[in-house]
Length: 339
Image (cartoon, rainbow, N blue to C red):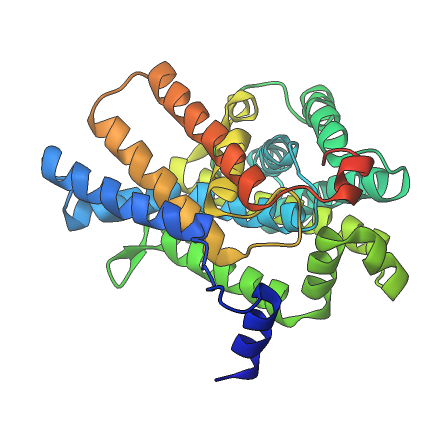
């Protein structure tokens, strides 16, 4: 008998058996499989290679945004301004290009704007110690207002013409798999390596798990918070480029959609606890597959947009309840307030 089992049995006491509690991630994965089987039986053409590729391509944007959101949620934060940041930064870059600027330079300038926005958000949260949910809730309209006042006025902005690689990114395939899915896979791998095998990632986990202990241990908490919001903004900007490439343009109304709440649904549903310090890329993938399967089924069933939002809202409420039960708030979190 291994030492780990002996220790666990000693803690449990003699005569008592260990009980393994199923994880939220595992339950959601099983529900996803069951839902996929159900839709495959009930709906025509659901179980096909074409529909599977369409499903994955449709949720790749959601999954990539969830990767960025997971970084701040694991660090016991949240970023409700990421979609507004994405919209303003990418539209500014597209508009500059359509006005005659080189696309590469325009992308760098737009990227500089979103990173600066992330730094401001992180600075307010880390140094002014304003809760992330209130900071980002306020910064979203501020960022969009700045963009609408100084950078652009029109709603629709077409993708730059004669940019071959942009067209390949949005509509091309490699080994019969759309390039957007390959980008999602590459970003997922990069975030996994960052979070699991770097000191920066370990600092985020430590900050989310127990901020006080992390501070006493000597982790650079405040700079880490600033950097993680800058990284989330940059990841959102990359997703904005995917949106422009896949749709031949971008619309400002994206900032007013429920996209950011869909991203939170993916993160929380996948099992990344809002109390911080738990979860990873695997949870994002599970949540993305669930939401993608659900959306695909509802679309084929021709459910109205309002009905789809109602169903997703109920699912999100259930996910929040599950998160509370599986990841109860500790005493420190209760004293410090919500995220």
